[in-house]
Length: 267
Image (cartoon, rainbow, N blue to C red; front, side, top):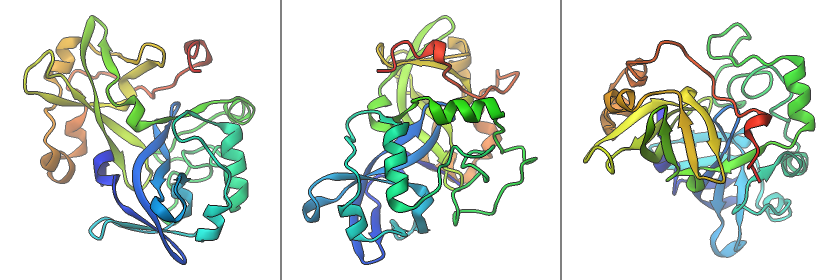
């Protein structure tokens, strides 16, 4: 099912021996548009924010607003400090995953390594599945040795949207698959250009993101964005076929990928 970042916020995270805190943000992979970590406010018991990966989830209960993870409070207390106000590097991720004894998700051909979903959150997806994201050996080698960053959803919310023929809105929210944690769609607020309207577009239509300019460039015209499905929180998530959320002017599907040439301003 599709969920929004707003759905995820304020959910309680439970360790094996007690509550950790509540979700306040999430970090997404800027190559595959997949949520890799939740940012959790620990409140008074630890007085800092920590990252929790979907790889550690034991049980996810949306009605009860609770996520249980295979971690102890002591493990989290002694975990590596990561500045949750800045992009997260691959080196930080390796320290984090090593501490908890979790696998590297970039060590396989699909979204979470050998599978398309974090363990425990869905059945394994075969390599020939249409949802599987295949990567070549060269891609895997590059991802292991390069220093890609994870980006805060909260920080990227508000980025202006640049269509092929000019600006037309800003990122307002994210719709992600609660099994794979892939961001399928972006909710774009066009009310500065089109009063009263928010629309939904596929994340695959993001060509590149300029971190310095705080802009996302999409392979669509302004008219295509005007004609995109209007966002209705309840209808979009629960009643509407997912295929209806893709722009009606889309003629091909494109996986968003920010190449090294496009990362001139990623710091």
